[in-house]
Length: 282
Image (cartoon, rainbow, N blue to C red):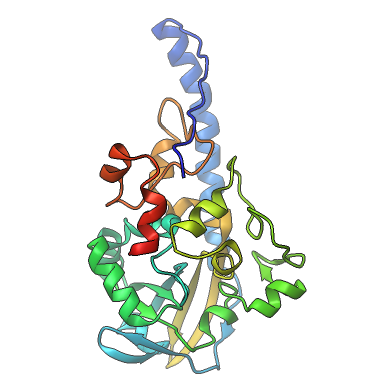
């Protein structure tokens, strides 16, 4: 994986007065977007709930747990479907970037009646090893051998992939064909899906049978309810670095995959292609 090219943009140079006038005009649109975002948040909370009758079992640092156990005394549960399949040798690079913010966020949520967990299909020992490597402390459960990730449309079987049975982000995908960068749509140039697959130690087909997502649950009177799920670009707001980049002078300014796991940047500076191998040996 080579370093992507940086786009160059031209900008007008104006007086402070002209800049302030332009900024005030933009501010009105930002306020409109904020109000719209508040309205969407309210509508999310008004979605109907679905009772979860199926018994799911997870492996955690504290032992076997049910879905209700993950609430740990709270009434709300947020699950990030972290792309780390049983065949992966390291967690997805993009999910790793998103999860870098979980440590600090989780403690605040836990004190506001919300538990935040990551859940992946890789065996617990793999998750624990990778968690130590990344220096994370947020709770992470393994659903290895369980239907949880499949039922909430974050994992898929090889048969589903081959026969066009994948329903992701509320739409059905066509049957998968062996190509260099198929299986998950991307806004980036180049081969971002293949690049991400390489650093998890898998091929594109195996890599894309796992998908990123988040699901929300409520616990009332001992019953668990599914209240919300989001996938793909619906996770953008959870990806902290993009909220900052969207306010930087050059914005996201990206072509291909430019981010790495946080412990790989130093190696990248010394050898631009080294991070492709990092996932294979993790």
